Image (cartoon, rainbow, N blue to C red; front, side, top):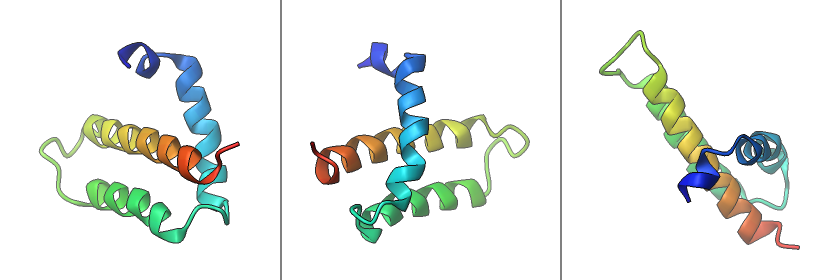
Length: 78
């Protein structure tokens, strides 16, 4: 698992797929909101390190990873 998360090829896949998955009519709005709402709330709520968005970026990447894996597996199975 760690090897995959540290792979540039894997993250390239995540970044290429996040936009089309969010725009896809095959993925229900509920699933999209399960990704977007926590990300937006985390970016807006006050931080422990207000001038260092490292934790915001890490949480966003983590949720992007979960969303792309889940949406591809459930809704875009080939």
